[in-house]
Length: 135
Image (cartoon, rainbow, N blue to C red; front, side):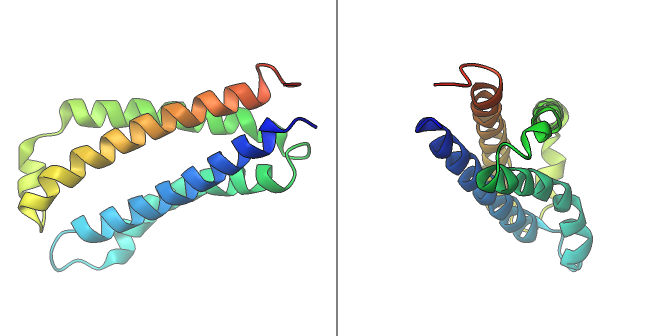
């Protein structure tokens, strides 16, 4: 077993945990005034799949290596939808949010964080499973 694989798995696990926590925090902060958090949190739960996949890889990569195509497909789709969302997002969306001035910083920040982080996680998974397996 090489020494770089555990580091990559740990980086993925930490990133996905931070990503999930960050998204939950942002959705709770930016939820429309007077609405319950439950419907908003339902939108976040598919993102927990990525955290669980990296958790399985962290403990037993040989057994759960078949999750890599699902992970890559989900991340690629997430990058595409985030990029489209940025392109089609209107300023009215941000103006309607509870924290108007704060939302103008947080919403683009979330999108950039997700795009860059997901691109990095795709690169790590490709390196982990498809390029230089025996580094």
